[in-house]
Image (tube, rainbow, N blue to C red; front, top):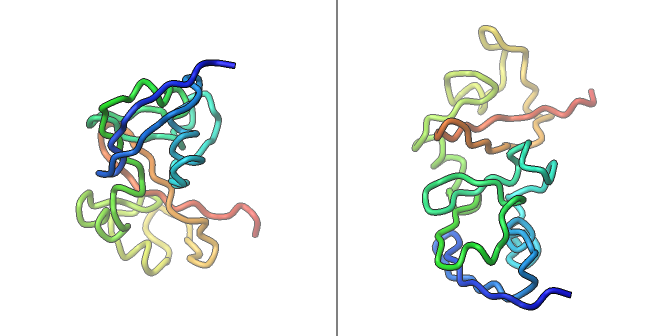
Length: 143
């Protein structure tokens, strides 16, 4: 078994101490040790973006980064970004390609999009792309 390693990391503005296997990913530390389950394990290969976090102002895939590498770093997860309402205000996010917030609040047929049934929304999925944060709502494929 690998030796124990340590790191002190600022996560969402709070200090957290990692003491454990130096082979553990930042993703596993966030989810299993700290209970920050908004950061998801998707493909576990850095392809899907479900594990995206912001480290010192830059986005990274937490599934590809070892926790011990982040000693002294500032990490922001989806939980640290605030409420969806604050995200709407700060970044003027768009849902399913719609341009107005009301398209998410009151699902209806928008120009160029299919009808969004609000009762079938799985929940917001945060994707960080091109240094902008976009909020997309996914619909359950079952119907």
